[in-house]
Length: 217
Ligand code: E4P
Image 1 (cartoon, helix red, strand yellow):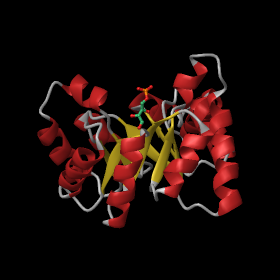
Image 2 (spheres, rainbow, N blue to C red):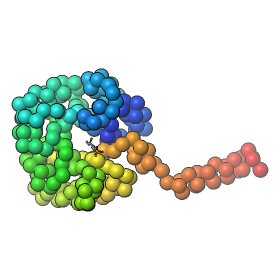
Image 3 (cartoon, rainbow, N blue to C red):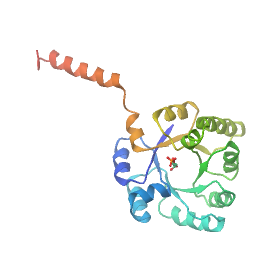
Image 4 (cartoon, rainbow, N blue to C red):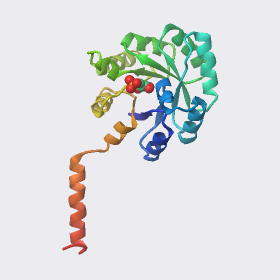
C-alpha cells in the first residue's frame, strides 16, 4: 500500500519525504488555509520536494471552470493530480480531464455508488473519507471494503486512496482491505514506526553490546 502525507505544511513534507517511506502528498483547501501562505508558493515548494503524486484541489463547482482550474494546476508539474469533488459537475470535469491524460483524485467520497461513478469517468484515485463517516456513527472502513469489491468485480483501474484517517488502526484496516493508498497526517506516519517492545529490545541489545565489548562492566 502506498503511503501519502495529508498536509500542505512544507516542513513536514520535507521531513517525511526524507524518511523514504512516503510515495506522495494530498493537500486540500483547509490544509492550505492553515499554512497562512499563498497557495501558489506552497504548491511550488511541495513540487520541488516530491516527485510522487501530489493532489492539488480545484475550487469551482461548475464543470467548465473545474476543467480550467484543473488544466492550470496540471501545468505546475508532471506529478500533479487534480483533486475534484464528487459532485455531478465534478465528475463531468473528471471525464474531460481524464481524456486529456490529466490524473485526478475524486474527493469527498462517502458512498460506494459515488465511487462507482468516479471509476466510470476514469478517475485515477477515489478518496473515501473514513474518519468522517466514523464520526457520524458509520464504520468508515466498510466503504473501502465495498469499493474494493466493486472495483475488483468490474476490473476498474481507479485506485482507492483511503483518507480522513484518525489513527494508525485505520492504516492497518486500509491495508487489510486492499486499499491502494492511505493518506495521513505527519503524526500518524511517525506513529507507524513505534512499538514499546522495539524500544525495550533495542535498549537491552545496546546495553549488552556495551558489556560484550568491555565498554561497561
Ligand atoms: C484527503 O485527501 C483529505 O485531504 C483529508 O484526508 C481530509 O480529511 P479530514 O479533514 O477529515 O482529516
